[in-house]
Amino acid sequence: MKLHRYRTMAGKANIYEVVYDDGNPVRVMNVKGTYQSATYLDDDCYELVFGYHRAYNALFQAGKPIQSVAMLGGGGFSYPKYLISHYPSLSVDVVEIDPMVVSIAERWFYVDRLMAEFDLDETERLGVFVQDALEFL
Image 1 (cartoon, one colour):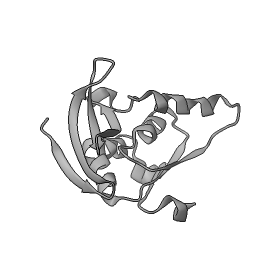
Image 2 (cartoon, rainbow, N blue to C red; image 1 turned 60 degrees about the vertical axis):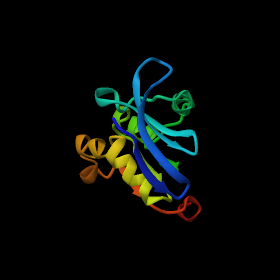
Image 3 (cartoon, rainbow, N blue to C red; image 1 turned 90 degrees about the vertical axis):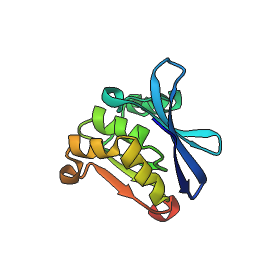
Image 4 (cartoon, rainbow, N blue to C red; image 1 turned 60 degrees about the horizontal axis):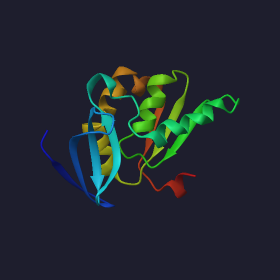
């Protein structure tokens, strides 16, 4: 995959593929020298690359039923994709201030595939809000 560049509110975003620490190829969104998001490719695209995302799952061991989650900042939708694909009764709202970041996620981070595969237009399990998170809250 060649390098794709986009201008976002946070600066230039570079989209490209690398071999990650676990030896698997991943597609990354790099903004100002920092990975802002990553996704495994193809069949593993709903699995989590970063350890801090896997740590989020501790909320499911708290003993309280969880019906919905709000993610403030969407990036490549890594955690929302995981939630939708692994928890069929869960609804997820993603609040992302930058419409370009949402477009990048749809095109390069399998959000378009997620929408189709899980019929999210029909079920409305994924809400995407392009606005400031403070306004959303």
